Image 1: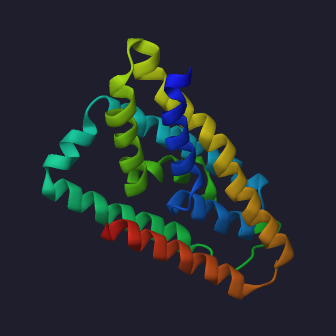
Image 2: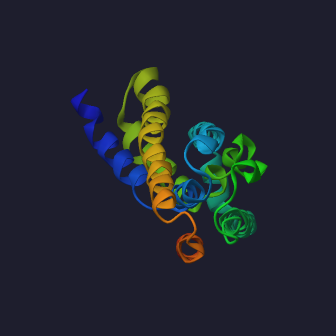
Length: 192
């Protein structure tokens, strides 16, 4: 188990730090509260699991050698996450005004379109899983570790947003500030 400690530390740092998914969760939590985020959270986890499997099967290598595909991916990624972030521009919503945009389908494609998610999954497989032997070490430990970390840290980002939203429920400035921070992180990720 000690041989997996570096992998787990890497995953904790990567999943717990600000990135497009965490900031979307925080902004949506501030706007809608935590409970309406659960389908979106489930979609995020399922999408990251699918991404991990795709990278494990070699999709990351295909993307890295094809410049046009990589550029298209980057544009689609930035566009979709910016679209999700801009949903909070109007400010807080009423209980019956929670859009379907925060559903499982919306969450399902966030990680596959996130450059940060691709980098962290690629590094997890190339730097850690490649050194492990056996089916468990090579094919199960990395995706399972990401799922557990996401359940914990994505939930905390959504809860933090919900708490901020409760304190500043009618603050249009706060909601727009969260949107702008999210857009800045997306732009930063695209320019990397």
